[in-house]
Amino acid sequence: MNEAASAAILAAFAVFCRIGACLMIMPGFSSARVPARIRLFVALAISLAAMPLLYDTLYKLLQDQSLSKLVAIMVTEILIGVVIGLGARLFFLMLEMLTSTIAQAIGLAGIAGVPMEEGASEPTLVTFIVIAATMLFFLADLHLEVIRGLVSSYEIVPPGAGFPTRFSMSEMADALSGASMLALRLSGPFIVLSVLVNFAFGLANKMTPMIQIYFAAMPVLIGLGFLLMMVLARPFLQGFIVGLNEFMVR
Image 1 (tube, helix red, strand yellow):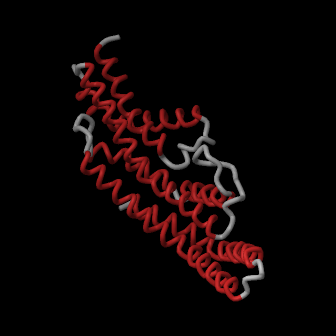
Image 2 (tube, rainbow, N blue to C red):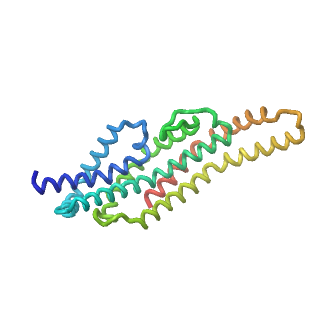
Image 3 (spheres, rainbow, N blue to C red):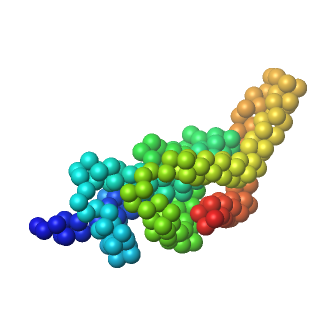
């Protein structure tokens, strides 16, 4: 194999490192429910599609480089891809956390569901919300925004420029802050409902200590929680997708 062919293969592998690392973290594609072979083929297809746009830059960069320099470039590309995919991933991780909190607040935490994103079993409510949010993520073409961000990242952070530590930390802080505020706004009504119902039945228990209020409180709390979820399911998911879209297209 001549030097030009070796540089071309290294250039293709460098593109795959950034794109493959992003897809490994990106919501939807990173789920254990998606076969590893499918994820590999998708990463290869996107890498080959982006290769003509980046070939000249990468070919010049990777020519006549030492082994240690090549390894450093590949590791940096992987880290950049992880940072890009982790921004959207944080919103879904926060969504799982807030839906677990909601399930606990309205008395549904004991109903185990099928795990979707993580290996541990989650309540059925978490499974339902995560599946719906993942479907909307693809229906709203937000996965294309991630791919667009990947291609645009080569202009902001070109290969060989090193890992942008300050920029990456700033992006992660913005993503975590935005996801936390979004989770707080979406879960607020359910937390307020739980506090009000438990406070009301706590007062009733103080007034009538001989009656087992707990057995009457749980059906009421679960029923009101289901009713509130039925009313707020659509704005809940819309608010999550709008918040994620605002973060990704800014």
